[in-house]
Length: 115
Image (cartoon, rainbow, N blue to C red; front, side, top):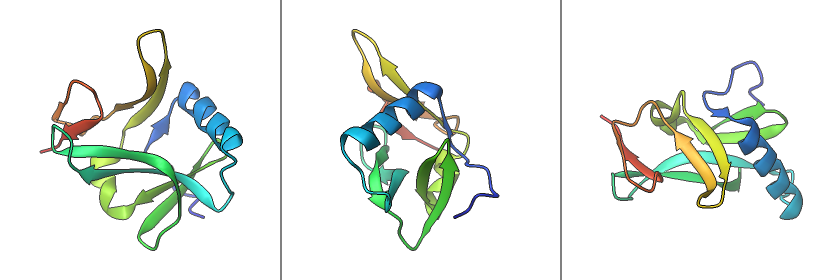
């Protein structure tokens, strides 16, 4: 595990609480970590990936508050400095991505473009 290097992504207290709750409720095996990444698509060009997965050969692994974070090495340039938050309000509920690398973001906040 890559514990000496600080995770390039920040999880807020709300996001940490929600991820830990999901791990418990969904009985996610300890062989899986929280994958954070990007993929082509979405209305702005790139979409965020957030889900539980096993570590792959091209992944970096970090730990945040006891949560294994998996990130493809190639995605780092799009994600470094990003903050993942969790909103739980009457109108909005879900994970929010605050990405300083995004030159534009779509209205739904789930896709972005980077220059």
